[in-house]
Image (cartoon, rainbow, N blue to C red):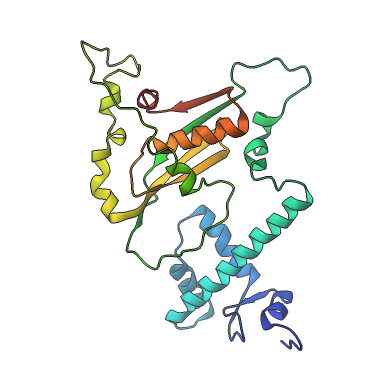
Length: 264
């Protein structure tokens, strides 16, 4: 395509393509292909290499190892464009407050009728950790860029609460293991609350999973990366602090190890 007096990628974008290099690209990928991969990635785990090989097969072309990197470059730019479009739309709609999504993402939770009676809990939420999304410390190249998201809590914010744990007192006398009270034996039986349970994992993984919070209607409210650790108490504390700061104190939060959390 001709691009007199401008950038090649600007001309390519007007025709529905993104170049695989910032200056003088020799290969371009269409927006439709990039959007197909974005939608596919949201529904199934599809590595970029597998997707590129599939495109090669459809076109009857031999696979070129550099094609994966070229596709990755174009896809990263495409995602950045979508994020910028969303940001500009949010500004126009006056939804650019960092906490706007948390306050309004769930219509049933956030909508109130006139003269609506006060509820015992204004919102019901649940929190839990997931250790399936692990990433090895030395696997692949590390991307130092920070992905801008109003879902994730920053590592700096979470680490503020790493020393907020009260020392556990050794229980005396007999206890009811089914009571669910903070001094119940079930507190000690949950492996995720035992820091020694994940010591070996710290050495292998940079990210050991995520800690997520969702409302009763299934809308994700907050997510925190679990960095080189198991399901430590600092993650639910940080999530709870954020919820209290933004949504207020009249909240009901469910947690499968709430007995241990109440003891922090």
